[in-house]
Length: 152
Image 1 (cartoon, rainbow, N blue to C red):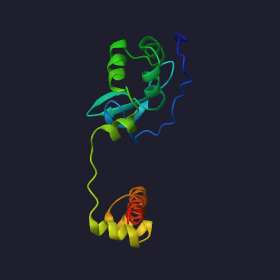
Image 2: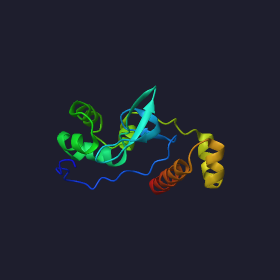
Image 3: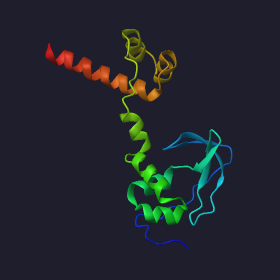
């Protein structure tokens, strides 16, 4: 058994389906090809012919909270790899993507008219945006209209 110095567990092996693609915080999209034989069995992902543990879920959380030595013992990877992963995993994956500076395309006046007049589903389909984006834009337009009326 491994050193029980994991302080923020438990870390459970995620359910996996061989062949499914998932997002690894270190390597991007990888295809699940199996499970490791470490004390905490973990999904192995393949990308460009390279097979490595998939950094997601509990492992990603452990990289942000646990010591490199504890992770090395629990997941069976070298300390140098753990330190590389920890350098990448300083913030949660979805948050990192949101903070990466990716810009959305600006709303056009025509799209604003569609958001005001159509249902959420129809506006999302017509504009090519998500329903969530349409709901947010609709709220923004209502607030802007309310401020304009109050200022007059």
